Amino acid sequence: MAVPRTTLWEIQPHTRAKHRILKSYLDAWLPIMARYNGRILFIDGFAGPGRYSGGEEGSPLIALRALLDHPHFVRRERGTEVVFFFIENDKRRAAALREEIAALKSERPLPAWVLYEVIEGKFAPNLNRMLDSLKVQHVSIAPTFAFVDPFGFGDVPMEAIARLVRNDHCECLINFSFDSINRFLTHPDPKIQEQFDRLFGTSGWRGILELKDPEARREKILELYAQMLKKVAKLKYVRRFEMMNEGNRMEYVLFFGTNSEQGLSKMKQAMWRADPEAGQIFSDRSDPRQMVLLQTGAEAGLTEVLRKRFKGSGFVPIEAAELFVLVETPYSEKIHLKRKTLARMEKASPTQLDVRRPNGARDRAGEYPSGTMMKFI
Image (cartoon, rainbow, N blue to C red; front, side, top):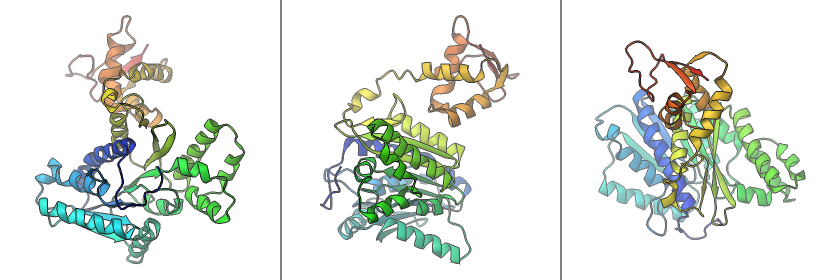
């Protein structure tokens, strides 16, 4: 969508899907990080006014409520300090956000261990300022989840993202504004070309301009950005989720980056909940009431993937299958593997799976505790 000129604007269906992914992931990330760390951060790099014109809550309020409503924190009396940084460059929207948070606080007073700051200014300079300050103090940033959700592409340099996520336990969810990037990629203005150099962290995007096929060009653009998140930002795992507009044309792509297998697992689950059919795309053209009713076919696809990988390998541990599905396939090892795929393979006639469960475990299809060995037939 075009950059709104008003303080508030109408929410789009794909934005609702984006917020579902964000909320689902924060529901998992916040208690996990709080369990093992004395301080955790949430950075909203393009926070907005906190609410849409129809009254729907924006990402800052969604993030605060994810904390305040979570059972882990409702029962909590002391321990982890949770800090929210909301960065917003538009003065009117920053003021509106402060009012929205004040209204939330009057409804739900924030505990003393919950801190927040609305920072008026651009994302990258403020992020670099935070990191510079910590560097001077010779301390590392606390575990951080950064939600980077801009209009356009001008203030999301790869190096700023990299400076953050190179730190331990720091992750990002980035709105890659494909539609505007694709439209401006051939622009002759050297300043815009320099913005693309900073966005991708390389001048390699120039080679994509020669591609005439729209599908091939789109895939190369997305592949390059994912590649640079791994190469420059040193992210081990990168997962993407495509957002389509009412014309079923790609509006933007969410890129999630982490070095944690647990983080990857939780984000995959969040994305599959937003798209039960493929776990990687949402279209404004879709009827969200029908999405949960669709038969995904994911289990049939995963069956073939597993057989191709493990057939002929003898007995393999359940842990090997879980790691393979998590890291090397688009499927979720938590949603698709055991009851929806392995159980069907085990019950098939003739069977497709020979299972040896550890002593004392129930010999029941769908249950594959640690120590289970499986042979794919």
